[in-house]
Length: 184
Image (cartoon, rainbow, N blue to C red; front, side):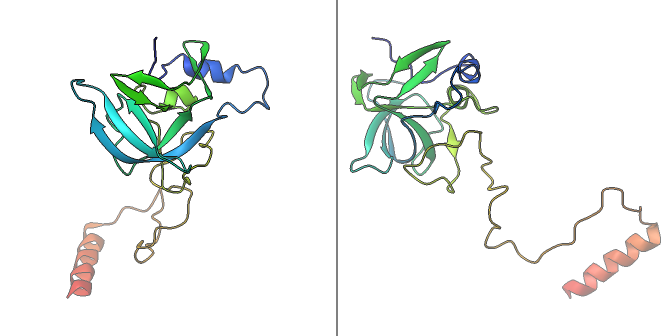
């Protein structure tokens, strides 16, 4: 039984060409947080994860994603959901991968149709995505851009103009001296 751990570059095309636009391409996909990550014994590139997706119990998922570390938020295709791979569609089922039971599948960015992010790496989402929620339709910014202001942003600095006047040597010297005086 072939159980792919991730999609590939052809997956994005499959999502872009879905016939029914009202159909949710992420049905059964949830944001989860990796609770633990352990290597699968005798398997060099497989990891056994415990992932909280907001259900009563954590899911055990086997993956080859090296960026799926404890504390990271990931996108999980749960058992019963469908994933598109190589232009086809596959049902996600419970399976044994590397001798370990797996109850779902981590998605990579191309599998979700996101631009950016590498195939084979888990699709990561920021802490602003709630555990158990549907993943965003587009790849989110991990720096929180477009979100609320960081708590420790510090004093607001004036924005520099793009085509600002160049300072003369005398003005630069005066600016340096003013900064030294402000520090003292």
